Length: 345
Ligand SMILES: C[S@@+](CC[C@H](N)C(=O)[O-])C[C@H]1O[C@@H](n2cnc3c(N)ncnc32)[C@H](O)[C@@H]1O
Image (cartoon, rainbow, N blue to C red; front, side):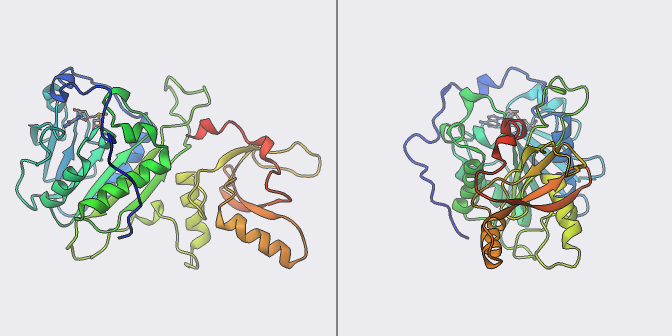
């Protein structure tokens, strides 16, 4: 497994509030940590990845919602967290365990006790994540799933410094690093969902703020029958180049993730020019403005071979659900029509 070079020394896991987590989380917080659209995405992902008849599931850093879809018939669901009332309110749980992972990363479970472990919007609060990840590997059966989900919201005083200072790409690299350093898992895979419309009725609906992004990194405990990380279902997967239904699968993937299928960067909202010569099906297109994107990079060479200057950028039409090349004469061309990128974070 290749390991990104991240320095985890020198106070990386310090927090502004180093008071006891047990006391801090004793106060019940019956809130939703994601909007309804993002929660539905998490449920969909959990349902797609957690398999087997009656799987035993560990919900790590659990609260009142374990994000299990109703279609999932789990055999046993153990919630480990810090607030008794939140865990008591969680209808999915068959067992509730109060345990402070920052004081004691060792999990109070036997080896290979679970088929799947979930950690939703909480990994940023772990001060000893590599020890905890190693413990998750120990309590999973070989081939068992560890699914770590995060977004861009958190409670700053209790979040570790390295997370607070990182951007989204660095957070992805950081969680991959936890998987790599603990040594118990196959190569992690990434799932992204960004830029979906805010749910109707949500207090930020109509403010131009999209649904909370969902970032998931998952891997299987080493030693399973696959020998590698399970695949996402086709509807959530970026298609392999040359696959028979690649264009259709790619369109589905872009619609789901709002990312460029060539480089994985988020797509920008780009307001189309008002000209009498071109008719657009939607006033806003989604375009990849990443100058390091291989599609855009290759475009320079393709244009040069035809004796023309310029390249093309990847463009997705959200109304028709189709993908197109957007010709650009220079690297800066059309950038002035990018709509506020924060809307898609
Ligand atoms: C943002 S909430 C997420 C709750 C739940 N996983 C969800 O998806 O709704 C963070 C959770 O992490 C738990 N937590 C924070 N620090 C912890 C620690 N040191 N040990 C165990 N759980 C902890 C808290 O009890 C809290 O429920």
